[in-house]
Image (tube, rainbow, N blue to C red):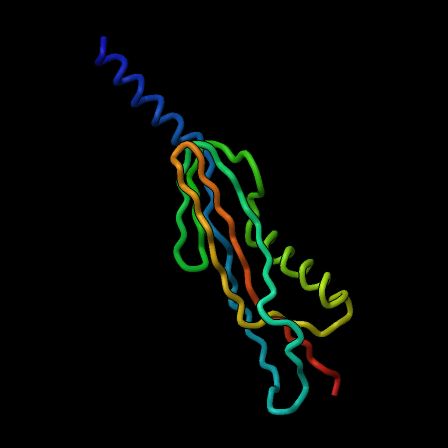
Amino acid sequence: MTLKKSVLFVLLICALSLSGCTTGGAFLAQNQTNVELARDNFDIIAKDVVGSAYADYLLGFSSSSGPVSNTLALVRVGGTATLYNDAVNSLWKNFEENYGSAEGRNLVLANVRYDTDILNLIVFTKTTLYVHADVVEFNQQ
């Protein structure tokens, strides 16, 4: 009888792990733009602006390595599946609350950094992603 229960338990764990949800971090493109910084044509208008996003999962595990966070879990119960996009949008929202609208301005994010805060309790895991950046505005000269 205990052998049948053990087999059923192993099959249940396999079924749950194959039917769960997973996230695999971000698509981090390397965009390069050459900008002339020899003249006084820019101002650093905001330093260390922060945006964040989170996701909560049941029966899972999260990890992070550098700018990429990964989660393997049964089901997401809170937050979003697009952590990086939502964190950058949150960063711009926080910028606009303190420095005015970004619309029509020549702004760029510089010194972009990623941090994650992960809570793993086996039955519950939470990943919070933070994006930090300085905002540079280029002048028309």
